[in-house]
Image (cartoon, rainbow, N blue to C red; front, side):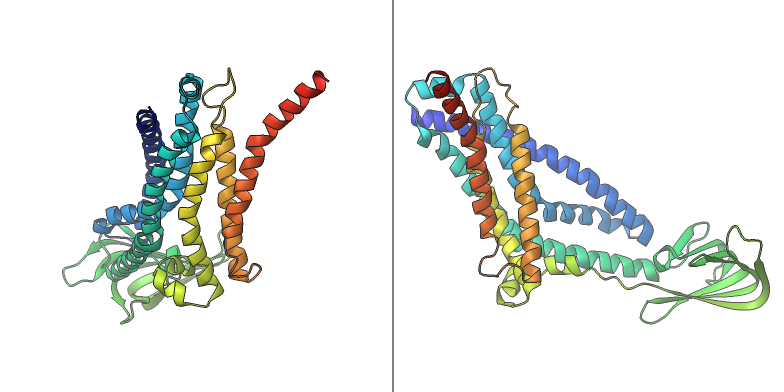
Length: 363
């Protein structure tokens, strides 16, 4: 009877977990697509790297989805079993806590093993690959020639160039250039121009011929108009710096060998996520127990609240380790103990309070 019940509970929990994780992954991918397409449009990423960036971004964020997906999957599965009185019937037939916890613990161990591989190995590699792709795509966009009939932005959007035609010799015809220097706006119109890039790719040089330049602050009546035979417009490309993402791309082995507080904090965060998965899965079983006539979704809000508190505690603990507020030997282990105590408090206090009220009424 125990094996049949265990397989049945495992099937229900796995189904609910896959559905919840799938829905969350679809929502995440939708946001990921919007962000990648926005960066691709601004920085002129080649189309070939957009899909790979979306895939790598999903891998990087799966470490956040798996724990909450498992927690909600267990709560929803047991909520249905309690609501339909199936758990009551199982307990009446002699099923014990071991028959209930065993399938959940088995799934938690499997998901934790996969999550450990994801956070310790796969996610850092995916982050490093995404950073490399973004750098290469940005560099390719910087060196790409100006196309006719299309607006092209440089310098993080501080300069916009438009050319009506591109001649066979590479010169641009009927060119429009706009640059922003704080409130000052500079607009240049030229009959023709040449576009070159410095050897390091960090400076674009536009040589404008036979045109006019307008300078002024929008809304002000004071403008300066200059006619020129040749005008050079250098546009500095800002360097790409992403310290946080670079830290997330560090291999786990290098983090273990480092004494830097920031890198040790990142290591503790990677170790905390798999353990978080185990804690949430085991806490979800008693959390999902329903009272008579309660709806099957009555405990979902509690599960979401516990997850939010848990994830925020881990984030705060990571910052404290990086700043030296919390000693490195303590790490993030205290967050797991705090969440277990909080969950026990939430689960046991209502029952204790009801028993106290019952005794007081019959005293």
